[in-house]
Length: 189
Length: 173
Image 1 (cartoon, rainbow over the protein chains, first blue to last red):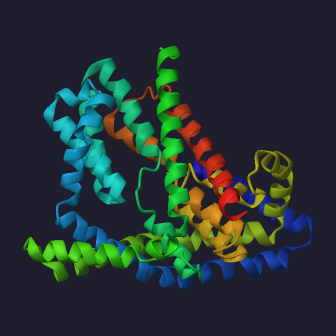
Image 2: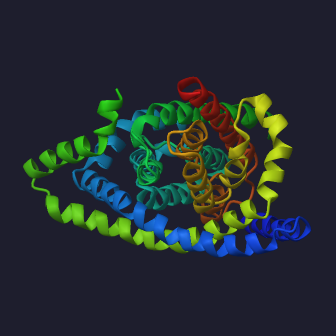
Image 3: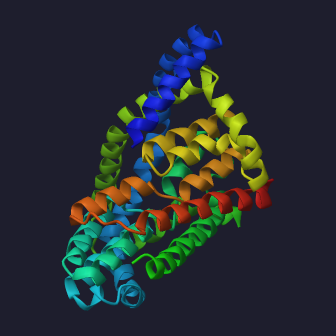
């Protein structure tokens, strides 16, 4: 899918550059774009690594586990069928708490473990799997560390001042996703 | 408020270090190991960024991006969304590094504290790579019938983009 979009964008830019006589600028811009990526990545690297370090410390301090335990009552309501199985509930809470803390690399394996278990529970389980996917496609992260790092490397006066806006916007989108899921679940059988 | 927010990394680092120290967690070991993981992440990100920065630079220099933005502007403006974020909204559900590149380009071009730069940042921070995540989960679970999952997830993305634009306009417009 992304490949198709990429191909279309590339072909049409080439066409447009040729038709509007911007071929030489376009040729120079491709190389300049690729060159600027390394500088940008180097600028970003320090902040990203510091966040990764802080999150690793949080993980080793047991924050994920504590958060996971606190989330269980909520998950029992959202996933009544799957949460009857103890290992599934554990995978679900691990997935959600890693998502909240922004530990993407820990969230995905736990989520996949949950997804596999849910697929084995019949139609009710598969319906809850769809809900899990909808939850995972909405951003649940409490601290948008990557974009804050990008902002700080590109000269923001206060990289974190967008946090309240990000939290409100993700909350609204999670609610919209849950609402749409509940609604569509009823009509789409 | 913004004083406290700008202290976020330092405060978190301090609080967690204190906790780690009194609970027998190897503080320095954890931090350096975490930084190393960040470095690995960066190594994975750089090839994607290189390709995507080149593509976006081509899009911009060829005039196609401007053309597309002008075409989408009447609709987006009516919705209260800056038309410059069009490419970001197009790439967001498909590719995480694509969206990161598009947002970074906007932040660089318009300034990190500009309305467009902030809107791009909030949109990126408040959403996920919807179609990619869906593909990963359903294929791992071996379930083919995604049914209402994708429409519901895209509905959440739409709400995210609109609310991001509106909140930013309200706060910094």
